[in-house]
Amino acid sequence: MDETRATHPIECPAAGGPRGRLALARGTPAPPPPDASPVTLDFLKPVIGPGMAEVDQALRESLASDVALIRQVADYIIGGGGKRLRPALLLLTAGATGYSGREHYLLAAVLEMIHTATLLHDDVVDESSLRRGRATANATFGNATAVLVGDFLHSRAFQLLVGVGRAPVLRIVSDATNVIAEGEVLQLMSSGRANVDESAYLEVIQRKTAKLFEAAARLGAVLGDATPEREDAFARYGMHLGTAFQIMDDVLDYSGDATAIGKNLGDDLAEGKMTLPLIRAIQRGSAEDAATIRHAVEGGGRLTDFRPVVDVLQRTGALAYARDRAAEQGRLARACLDGLAPSPYARNLLDLASFAADRAY
Ligand code: IPE
Ligand code: IPE
Ligand code: MG
Ligand code: MG
Image 1 (cartoon, rainbow, N blue to C red):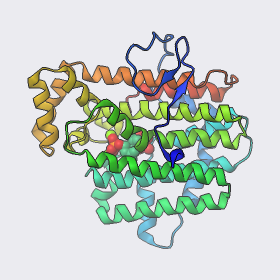
Image 2 (cartoon, rainbow, N blue to C red; image 1 turned 180 degrees about the vertical axis):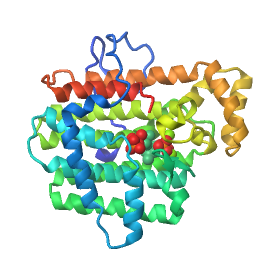
Image 3 (spheres, rainbow, N blue to C red; image 1 turned 90 degrees about the vertical axis):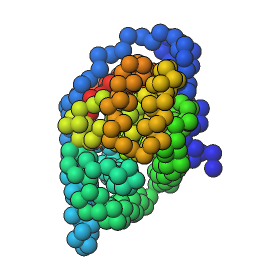
C-alpha cells in the first residue's frame, strides 16, 4: 500500500530557496543562519512539562499486568528514562494546532510504548549491552524475555489505541509500526555489507526511525483538527526531524560520550552496520582508508577495528559531513513550520529541530 511507504517525496518550502527534498541534495542554497542550537531539552519544560507528567502517569497506568516479569521488565526499561521525544512531539503539534482535550496524553504514552518495544527488540538484534545508562533488558533478563516483553508493550499499545477508537489515529499508528518493522528488516539484510550507498541508508533510517516521528507530528495535527495542508506539513516536519535525529545518532555512535548518550559507542560497527559516516569515508578516503572501513564492516565486529575506523572518519571529514547532512535535515524540518501561527509550541518545535540536528545526547 502506497500510504504505508516511508519514502514518499518529502517537500517543504525551504526558506530562501527552491523546495527542499528529503534526498540529501548537494548544492542546496545557503540557508538562513540557524538558530543557536539548544544543547539540552530543558526548553521543553515550561511549555509541556506538566503535560509530560500526565504522559508518564498514563504510561505507568498502562503497564499493568498480573504477570510479574512483564511488570518488572517494563518498569526497568521505561523507568530508565529516555528523552521522551516522540510524546513531546505529539504534545507540541497538538498544542500548536489548538487542541485542548486530554486524549493526547494517552496517545503520547502509546507512542512511547511502541518506541520502547522497538528498543527492546533492537537491542537484542544489535546485541547491545547498555541503554539509558544501564544494562539493556536483554543483558539483564535475557533475549527471550526482552523480545516477549517488547511484544507485550506493542500489543498493549494497540489495546489502548482501540480504546481511543478513532480510525485515522489507528491507521497512522499501525502504518508507522509496519514501516518501522520493514526498516529494521531492511537494515538486517545489509548487515555486514559495505556496499550501501546514501540513498539506501536514507531509506532505512526514514523507515526505522523517522516514520514514528512523522506519525507523532501527524497525530498532533489530527487531534487539533488542522487543515490537511498543515497536517501534511507537520508530517514532513516529523520525517525531516527524525532523519536528522538518526543521522546524529549514527555520528554519536563514533564520537559521542557514552555517559551522555547512555549507550556504548561502537555498537554499529560491531554489528557491521553501514551508516552515513562510513559511507562517506569510503567515498572520500584513500584506497587504504576505504579498505579499513570495508574490512571492519565485513569482519564481524572485532573490537580492534573501532579506533582505526574512528581515525579514518576523522581524517576524511566523514563525521563532519554527516553532521552537515543532519543540519540540512534540521533546516528542512524548520522550513515545514513556515506559516504556523507563533506560539510557545511553535517555538519549541523550531528548537526541537535544532536540537535533533546538533545534539550531544
Ligand atoms: C533511540 O531513540 C533509537 C533511535 C531512533 C536512535 P532515542 O534516542 O529517542 O532513545 P531514548 O528514548 O531517548 O532512550
Ligand atoms: C535505531 O537504530 C533503532 C530503532 C529505530 C529502534 P540504532 O540501532 O542506531 O538505535 P540505538 O543506537 O540502538 O538506540
Ligand atoms: Mg541499536
Ligand atoms: Mg544508534
